[in-house]
Image (cartoon, rainbow over all chains, first blue to last red):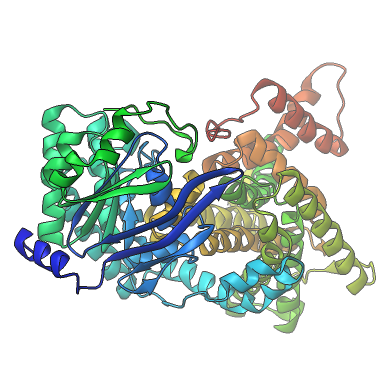
Length: 319
Length: 309
C-alpha cells in the first residue's frame, strides 16, 4: 500500500480501523493510568503515540496486547473484539509488539527467538477459542472442577504433540522446515542474516532490537506495536530502523503503532500522531498539526511535573 | 567383580532417580514450583505397568511377546501417569499459579498424601508383585557383566533421556517450553499458549516418571501405594544437587546420587573404622542434599534459579 492510498482511506474515514480503542480505562490501585482513551489506527498506517513520561503510552500497549486486562473499555482489531482474550489469542489474532526494555529469550539462539514468534503459525492449529475463559475466571470455588472436562482434550492434545515431536511425521517435518525458512527470511529482512545461531544475549544492543522486530514479525501481525524502537541508538542506527519500519508497512503490509521519544523519528515517519498526557488523549492529528497544538506544547513544556511510576515499572530516558 | 557391580547398581538406581528428577526440574523450570506429588505419579506408573503385564499373561510372557508386553506396559504407564498429572495440574495447581509460592507447594504435598492413601486403600495395603518376565542371565564379559534387567533399565533410561534432550532442543514444543520457562509473559505475547505448554511439560515429566515406575517394578518386583514417597524425595534431592530447573543437572544429579549411595558408601567403608551397611544410603543421600544446599545452593548445573527479580 502506498502512502497516497493510506492517506485516502484515512481521510474518507470509511475503512474499518485496523485498531479501534473505545473508552479504554486502566486503573491500578489508586492510579488512573488510562482514562477513557479513544484511538483509531487506520489499516496500513504508521501511527505515532507520544506523550511525556508516565503518560500511559506503554500501559496502552500492555492493554492492547493483553498484558493487562483493561478496567473498562473495548478494543477491536478489524472489528473483531480482542479485549479479554488470552494473550496468545490476541497474538494469534494479529497483534504483536516489541518492548521498551528488550525482552528476548536470552538463552536461546537468534533463530530460535524468531521461531518462538512463529510458534502459533507452525503446522496445523486447532483454532478453538477458549470462549469459556471468562466464565472460569468468575467462579473461584467451582473453577478447579470446571477445568476437569478439559482433561481428555488437553491430554490428547499434549500426547499427540509430544508423539508428533518424537515420531516427526512428514507433515511436522515439512512445517518445521518451512518455518525455519520463513524465519531466516525475516532475519534477512531486519539485517541479521548470518547470526542465526548466536545466542540472543550475545548480540550487540542494536541487533537485539532488530531481533525483537523479527520475532514480532514472525507472529504475522496485522498490527505491530513498537515501544521506542530507536531508544538508545545513534542517529545512523535509528535512521536504519525508521527505514525498516517503513518497509514493514510497504512490503509486509503491517500496520504500525509506535511509541517514540525522538521527535525527529516521530515527525519523520508517522502519518498520524496521538498524544497522551496523564492517561488522557490530549491531541490527535497529522505531525504538522501536533507540532503546533497548544495542549501538546503545554504538556511537554508546561508544568514540568513528571508523572511517576506507572509505565510497567520502567522509566524511559527522555530523548 | 564387587566394585563393578556396585557401579552398575549405582547406575541402575541413578537411572530411576534421574528419570523422576527430570519431572521435578521440568516443572520447576516452567512454574518455579516443586511438584511434590511427582513421586506418586511414579507410583501410578508402576501400578499401570503391573496391570498391563498381568493382563498380557503375567509370568507366562516369554519370547517375542516379551518385547510387546514391555512396550505396552511402558506406554500404559506413561499414559496413566500423564493423565494423573494433567488432572492434578488442573485441580490443585492451576488456580494457585499466582498465589504465594508456598500455596501450590502445600497443595502438592496434600495431593501426594491423598494419592498414597487412595492407592493403599485400593490395594488393601498389601504389596503387589511384578511378574518375573525377564530371563535371568547376564550380558558382558567375566567379571564385567550386567544382569539383563539392569542392562535394560539403564539402556532404556539413557534412550529416553537422549530423546528428551532432542525433544527440548529441536522441536517446536520443546522450544515453546524453553521460552515459557525463560519468560512466561513474553512467550504468551508472542503467541505461545502458556497453559497448553505447561500441560505438555507435566505430561512429559509424568511420562518419564511412569516409565521409571515400570522399570523399577521389573527390577524390584514389590510395589505398593507408598512406594513413590522415598524415590520422590530422593529424585527431588537429585534435582537440587544437579541444579533445579536444569535438565542436564537432573540427569547428572540422579546418577551422582545413585553412585553416592552405592559406590560412595562402599568407598567410605574402606576407611578405617567405618562401617556403613546399605541402610545408610538414605542418610548419605540426604546429607548430600544438606551439604549442597549449604555449599552450592544452585546445584552443579544451576545458575538461573533466581534469574527473575
